[in-house]
Length: 261
Image (cartoon, rainbow, N blue to C red):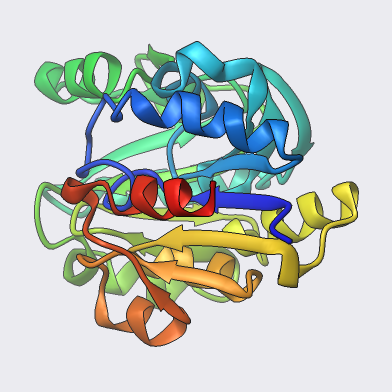
């Protein structure tokens, strides 16, 4: 019997950067809960962005945000994985020497930026619904840090190769689509967050279903026997997953959940 369902958001449940889901999924999740099945949204997004997307049922789901660095529900964090401040500051200075890259530094509840690109900030606030604070200098920010993100409109994997070579043994670094590289504390990933949730709820991998499309979803899929790659997933993800779902634009996740009901 399935007891836990976890899904990635961007590229899996919605198109990259999408800010709406098919509203039918809200009722489906509530019906699943009546059958004793928990639902978790697992994303590189901030928890506030996930909550905005699932507003009608925000009290009924778990948030595995910031690629697993934050595990919580309805604005309450249950588990945080922090990154040491000196390392964050070192990376800020390193990225500043690389043209064409934007930097975001995530605390548990606020994402900090010092970019001069107002269009980028507006997109994050009004598109992704992030709780964002614009500061004069990221080097002056004092907070707990759980994620460091690098954005490039296209080709972020190639643009951050040098960074990954320098910091790859000090951070968990993962590529999320063609625009984002996310950095968390060593060992942190969606898979680790799923494992923590499974242990807390006493749910086995054999009772878990998961959906993904990108490299940062692979560890999560490995924690679920019922692992699904959506039709638009990267080849590496399709090789990892046991099963296939339709594409994100064709509501692949929703179709499988309705079949489960």
